Length: 432
Image 1 (spheres, rainbow, N blue to C red):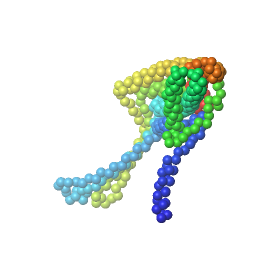
Image 2: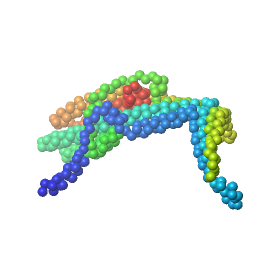
Image 3: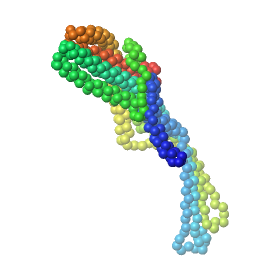
């Protein structure tokens, strides 16, 4: 009986354990840290660095000597009309070994520049890792702020709906004393119905933003995510003073293009050097042995040793094509750097100006919110005493709702734009 009970309960317990959801309580800093540790894009960038390092190792090997070794064995037999003496030596073999060591001496810098290009490729991969980390961290911050805003928007929409329901109850109290008409009642019901779609959309927006953040943080859909911070926990700072030139020097996109220009310079020099010969020293060891069947004597190895200096030179129009390609690639990269640099300067300047404007908008939104609260309380008191209509009360309530949303939205925009400034300016400590 116990055995049957275990067989029944154990699978159910395993299913329950598999379906149990985990809850993550994360602050903004913890969310950024989790994204940087778990996001696959960073792992892919690090894998690219490993490939670049392997290419550098391969390029450096060109400075070292190369060794080639060959061994051959040829068996032979004589056929046809043979004399008695020939028949005694009708078969045999020839063995040969060829061992050669080659050391490049002078290649007009082609090997050295190839190593330098591979080294800059490693530097580009490191820049790409830093740029990827900045993007992942900014994505985590922006999504965190969007979740906070959509959550606040849902709360404000719920408050608006509850206020409308409260006003409806007050209207019913007035109806008992004959101080409200059927028109007021229908309008109140319409106002309540009008708030339902906004409430549902706000709830859906919150759920979608929360799911996007969970995906970015690599949290499964079945698990729960709770944000431990609100906008009230973040200080509204003035825009940082940014040194444009210093920011340009640390901007991954600009750094990558500058490295590409440097690589283009090296390619141009290598393309020109390809018209010159390559010099190398070599040593060759070539022992051979000839052995015939019934040979009464010992077969001997005959050795040949060579030392010398070789020169390789190739002809063809491909070298001119390589040179033209390298020159045009440098021109293209230089032009791209100029365009990207101007675009970056404008974008960063615009963001700083936008941030300053958002600070002013936030101040205006807070003043509007304060006045809307006072107006609603006053209107609500007048409505209870029967001095104003229900339509006027609803207008004040909608005004209050818009003011609340204005404060929440301006806060979200402030923090997102500040995070963009951090990313573009590569501020120290922001995403490392």
